Length: 525
Image 1: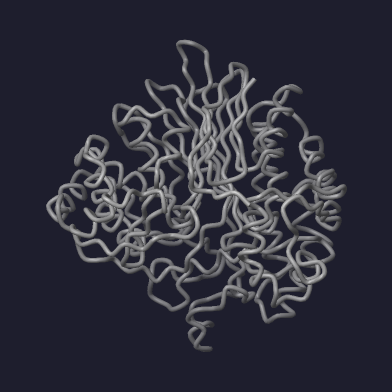
Image 2: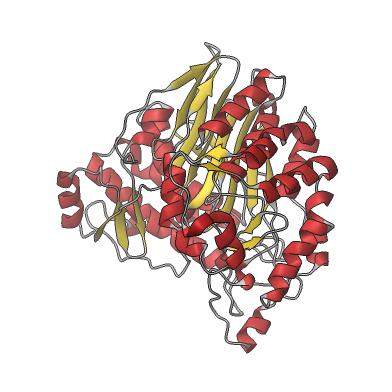
């Protein structure tokens, strides 16, 4: 099996359309959809449905999604497709039972999946082709089988323990007691049937009837609080994007409950500190320090704005920047900021631009690798555990509450210039995503790297009291960072995964980058 850290990949180019995803079959599906007359949103939905089949550790119908869409290269619109807690889930209910930290495999970690409703809404509002047509490639791959690619095989073997506790998940994903190997043909017939139901009935095929009833029965059988009414009530929400200026560009993110706000806060600090122009060791150091500052705010304030007042304007204000800047030492690491959030790195993101320059940044996730590990055999749905992002004790902004959406790490991004979309992009990696946005954008907009080179640079992440570093970070840089007071924590697996498409409006060219840390590719035509 290949290593995923060494860099060796060319920039993709095209004119009429471009797609970048973390799996070759998803990218190919997106391009085929574009060539068949679909627009960027059609291609994104078709591709992400394929990813829900071929990357089961990373995403699935049992998860959530967010999207940014710029019609004909104009101002982006946003969709929040995150799921909600059951109506019976109150912080007091958990406190009375001393359930302050449910296990990742607990039914209490499962919020109502939001992605299928979001797909349907995006298709109705921005698509050109019927949903039934867009889901056909995913249905075919689930039914007839797909070949397991190297990174997918690696994740399957690495995180097989999540599948072991649930007999249904074990039977479906560990046939014969073992994960599939690279090159094996793998089928998911029950998932194919559910996709067919959604293709025929839309959101009703997932949230009303046999599929929802089966999920509710599974969760309630394990002690969950979910009801059929919770599933029927799930709706995605069109929201106003938030933005800031960075290096002469407008960077758009989805608003809370996602952590896109944190990326924008960090960009404002990065601009003032000239992160892009700093020598490499200093650049890594400064990125770590602004991460600590912004993530402390994230863990304090970020929550569902429909239930809690999130001070977005204040956190994006000059006053916040001016308060933080004096605390950042360009030479010495500040105190570590410990987060009690659970680790999670498992998501897919994709970027698509079509011939009309409709642009989509799309992200879909089941949170942990293989989510909760709770699998519903009749529908083939593997459930996420996004509810772990809640606080389960009363009194915090992000405390669990009926119908509340948890703090979310998954964040699509969109760069615009002079009122036109320039680059849809996304960086997978759980908590890392906000830091990943800043690192990637400082590479592209500040250092002049192309999208592929920008995503290929070695990554670091200040989290949990240490500075996580990929194996490609040079030893001399590590020595410099230790001298500055950083506790270095080498990573055995790569950090995150980036997908992006850059538009050259003057030449009519498209440039795509797909992270070498994944199996995927960027393709243009």
